[in-house]
Image (cartoon, rainbow, N blue to C red; front, side, top):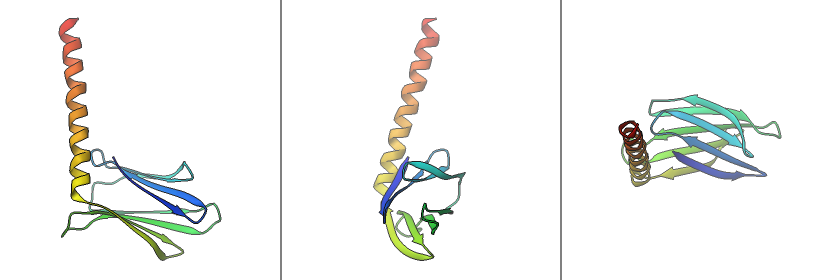
Length: 114
């Protein structure tokens, strides 16, 4: 799971994206305001903030650097461009793979014991 967090004026915004199942979620002040599945190279979420102003989140992978980028727009003006490099993505994938191996091993052991 990759997470981008940003303080936007008086709001705490967060975009979470799973690099395993394609689920993306946007939170504003801890409350989920948008979610969708995405298996492509980029996606977009448009949500209103509590003050009524539109906010847009763009999630994309830079094909040259393989960095995952989250661009945040308020009133169609870019206010933040957050990045996570390839190493963060690889580390997240490894943790997920290790967790899956551990779960499968536990299930196998349980099946063998019973």
